[in-house]
Length: 311
Length: 250
Image (cartoon, rainbow over all chains, first blue to last red; front, side, top):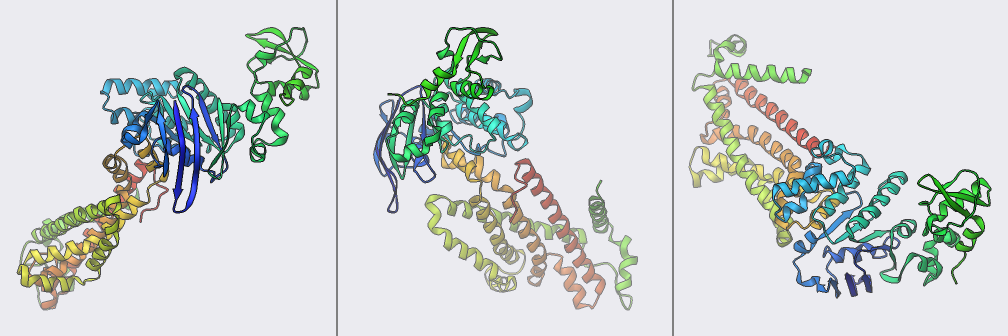
């Protein structure tokens, strides 16, 4: 659990983070959203002491981080940034092994861990271990960056716009990978982004920041249904609200009995995808398939009700 | 092999041959002599003098490198930042002081010979290396230095494992400049009795023997070009090795 308690950061008269209090539950993804200059990155960087707060406290599992030497704290917290920040003069394997080496792991344990992580991120160790970062594509570099952040199995992973430099297709893939890895390891993730779409897709909770202040911190459905301020509503995009709401749920959870013909939709798809397919094909309902079997239908009428503002 | 490398190889082999057996070239150099003057320098072995010349340059550059890189590291650490302007002006003074003046001032203290030349070359070599090391250490990719901090490296680990390796090509460019300047400047050392190729040139000037002047000048020139080329190639290799070819060397 990360407890941010009344944190303020002031740079020569300018308040960048203004009395923010925020609790991040263990094993969840908390996405901090805001425009540039909102203080979101500064807030995140105070968690691993890359920025020292002017006042306030941050506790990790009850322990005040003010008492922990910065380098020791950072070795316990994964850190992945936009533009990956890989060491250009070290191979992929050496990059991933950075924190284990700093922690003094033995060679065998480190090598095994590097192999495990590269495999997990779909980078064949034999092919990629000895390559230099500049020989990789943007998406591969980004994966190595996250693999390096996770190398010493940290409980907490901080990510600063990790997908900012990726094209939409690779970005979507990287987001799915992150969700899978978070489920696998139960890592607490704090992710900073300016993209509300990304926040709603990834976040268990979303913290919206503007001009240094925390405007709202809630589950995505709550933020969409009841934005705390006009700014939060604007960030969500008023005309996008019903679709964002639909994107939160899976078809699998809203299957109705009934037989319809036509091209089926996967149960793992989001309601938003189902809605788009219904509109596009001009059908009132779609058959739902799961593992190749038709398991029911999803109807336009039901989706319309679900897309309405929750009461 | 590329044409450039063939030319370099030919020049290098010719230089070695000339230093080992200068009399083979007497026919060529006799074209520049008058009144039956000797065509090849005859007051000492050209090979010995050249090695001594290189030795002085090497020693002076090594000392400059250690001091300049050390200073640049100190003034780019948080505790040394306030010394940045001071050390910059010190290195600048080293550069603006004419080497002849350094020799003249150093002789009364250090006597004639190699020592005053070493001091002059050492002072002269500081600035390019210092400036380049500063450039190299302060223009690192921000994402990389941020990541180095973020993974939990201490200041010392960041310097040794990340900052210096990445700044190395730029530092090397400074050393290259310094070596080439020193190679030429070392000839002046012969005016205070240091054993350098200046001796050959001065002997030629005193006896109006153009062949001697040419020999001294050519050896210095060819050495400078070859060393410059070799260090440039090393820099390019290091830049490519670290994927930094896009970053311009200072």
